[in-house]
Image (cartoon, rainbow over all chains, first blue to last red; front, side, top):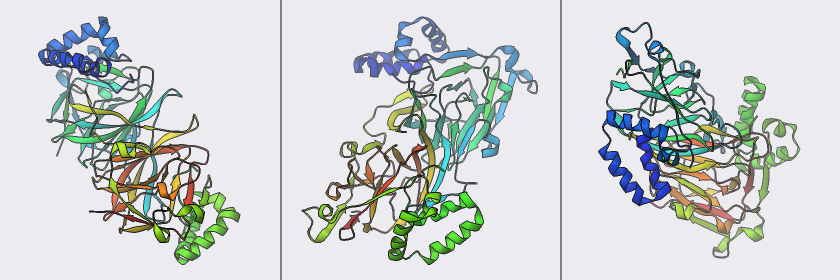
Length: 248
Length: 248
């Protein structure tokens, strides 16, 4: 089974469907409901993640999960271990460190198809991490989050880029941190993408999972499939409260 | 310069902008306006295509252009050399010969991101024709055609797939013919994609360029960049009138 982006162990119950069919999936869904309380599932998740046959079976390749150390968690400018992220307008300049903004603004199109089509060429390039990787086209349907929201983790894909393009012309929120071995919370940036902007996270760039504010939304996602571990997750230290705000 | 999809010689005047800057582009735009009558430009285009230094300079790699022979142009079921294409609803089954339909319908999602996102995984795979190719993400802004319309040519990309996903939730028309060395007009099929459906043409599949009916529309396009000739164009024999109808 391919690496399908980052999920934690709870979500991976669902992969049983592909591996073992509907019967095991039913049991998994039942267990998911029973154990879905956050604290318990987190505890249980750790145990499974480290020891269980199931985990390796259900989610290949496995994740690397780091936890930020308390000493590096809290940026000095924020008292009481609270990091407040206020999402800023997304621009190519501000986002250049993290990847591409997929947007016609600021680009000159080529006129093709007998003058009937403007082509905004190569706004983003898909990184697939060598000859074993391939580019996949997927749809993501996101449930909405209520903002402000607390963030608990971020993820990165060391082998491939990942692009998100909104299909419902609704804004979405982008939370990123520079490519580095250890995520530094003080370096996290938050942006608001308009409904006409997509983003392409370069491989290795830390990012939060998809955040649709207010309403459910559909996205086209282009990312990397193929063998190898293409997902690391870092959970914030629980003493650091990371809060995302969406100014409107 | 990369191959940016199929364009005929008239469109390629615009590439001078990249190669020679704004001055030459101005001349090109003037010439384009002067010679934009279809018959004259077609004649002129042939000459340029075969002989001119400009053509090779302006459009690398060059196209292979075929013209369907009269003997194979007219399907026997259509009298008077007229081929009438009535666009049918797009389904994965009907389109399987040509590529993928990018649509959630009929697929079971994976639940990821703490249950907040449904992932419809690998609805299409990007073909990049070997290690020298890469997947590109582009935006296409299409001007509308009035339907019914006469079609004059089709194209194929021998080295890569090409996906179109509507960003304005508006239907568009898809005209395709099976992968084969010579396009057989009798095998052409036409489909209507809903505003929630994208398509991914497999490499080598003959297809018409983007057709947005009624209104201008934006598309996300994922295709192949890299060296090599990735575009062949075939022009229908002028004695064959190919007409596309969009029943509503």
